[in-house]
Image 1: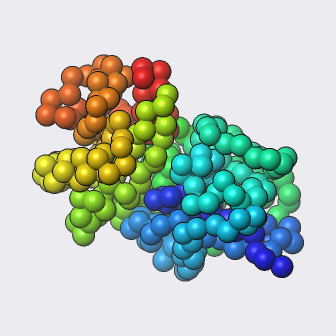
Image 2: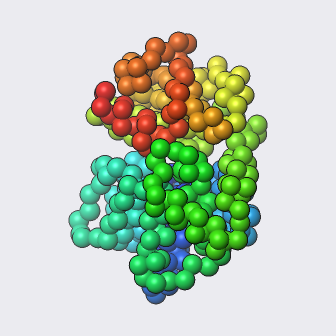
Length: 306
């Protein structure tokens, strides 16, 4: 029997990769023939976590065959999914994002909770099914929660995330603060990336009221380190705008220590960002105090003001 493929979104982040691996473990406990996959390269933060807990990366897939059975984690928008997703048979979705552009021809299992992380939903699913959580799976869950909530400091963090993280840290036998900060800092080493690679580390293709948009995000401990190559980044952004016919491209450079972001914004619809964040773009950039979450602090206000 052909395996059911499990994967997160393109340009995968830690939650996307870990949730695929966790869902694979969960489904196997239920007797399903499944395989965790990914839709791109892992970043350094994810690499650190996988190495720490001695887990191999999922295999990479590019295209889906017609009728391929799949399970989606950490996304539902087809624009962020695998090539050929329209022809696939979606069996399940476990996600914590808005529901947009999603349609199936048959009923399916769908969980969408407004938690800070998909792995938190999966944690609940283990508890509901009375399945044991191994120390390795606990480590993957914990890593995903730390990543998506910026060590429980993001405004997306819920009590569910906090309680899950504390319980999982005990199972994984790690110090939450110490491990979390080390993992996040591993992801801020951007020195080996080209501007083009920086823009695809964590980029989401999103339609905002018919405007083709990319919102990319990189984490750092010093915004100025990234801004030193601003002109090269802008050149790469403009190349993407032209090649993909984008209306708006926003790069959020997020300081994980001080919980602020600097945005670089390009495209014919850049004025939407000014209106949304009540700022004046100077040389295509603006500082957003206290803004760290694309899901809760960037995307919703862009939609409201588009």
